[in-house]
Length: 479
Image (tube, rainbow, N blue to C red):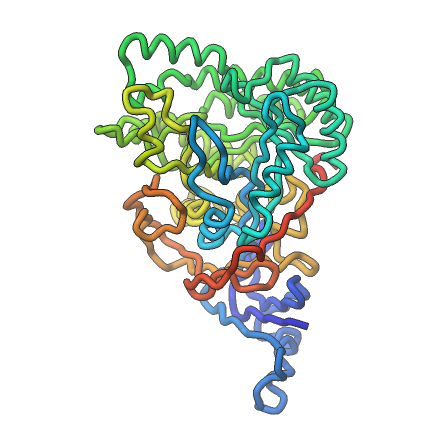
């Protein structure tokens, strides 16, 4: 039996904060006991009875005094190695999951892609091949559905049975991932029957393409125009339409990367009506804005993603949505492209800039900064970054909490350490940081994945292949 005891820290979950010691046995949390009590002392009794060294193979004791002991983060929206715009996301499953671990995330759910004319299974198998044996932390898959037909609908049933329980559709990107309202309705009807959850990229891509064409014809080619053509109203309109299609289908809906206050209002209205509608936002919408897209000398290209960054006034409504639970999850939509050689593909034509930002390493720290700033509580931090994504996508309580029986995915977090975010020091395989120069308080110190040290006192001790594929049950908010 392998055993680890984490002593003296403040254990924070979505529901509790308690000074407790944590006993880990064979990769799982075995028990918690209030620090200093006989029960806690018993965790290490074998070590101290004689004063002699512990029995060989007994395990380790980690001193977490003055630190937070939190569940490993669950990032439910990443795109490792995604093909997009004639290139590929620059993080592989190996580099991306290693960077995630450095940032205190111990589970990712990535997106396998169905290509038009191909089977879901073919896309899923391709993503398994990319990830298998390469991940530093555990992972699961959502399925991007690009081609709705009778065979696709049957395959959705099979995938749900084997633990791929969520399907992403796009109202954007005509000619690539786009589904029309009829295809969306059919997939939603199927998910209503099989228990799957439809995830929606809600932007009116048909209208956006018209605005792109018109902007380019006027000579408006700089990165900032990416934000101007992808209008907040077209995000809100698509969000409204997705909600009503889901209502017609009798299906739940999860709207990804919500960026606009008008879209938040649509989600809040639907939830007030009692509909099973959920929303996710991302750190870039909470901390960045169109000011970044407008940076000179093509620097704004670094911040091109979809949905786009919005004017700063939208941020207050996103934070409010997180506090009122009209938005439930913060994921990263991590989809990095290097500035040199990738983002530069769009010089002279913003529509050719690969869409995506790096962020899988930054999420937990940025959200802790929100705690420091008084925007959210410590428990809400854990709720939106760990527990809710685990529940939303059928991983709880295996992931997302610290409780007996849970996987020992645990982060020792120093809430007082200060750091400056920079491409010089991050571990993502990308040549810039979206948060370059940003000072934050709080830093990951040690990370365990299923009881194994992946980061040990700011040193990487993990390995490619430790992370395992994790099948998921259906959304746990619909039981």
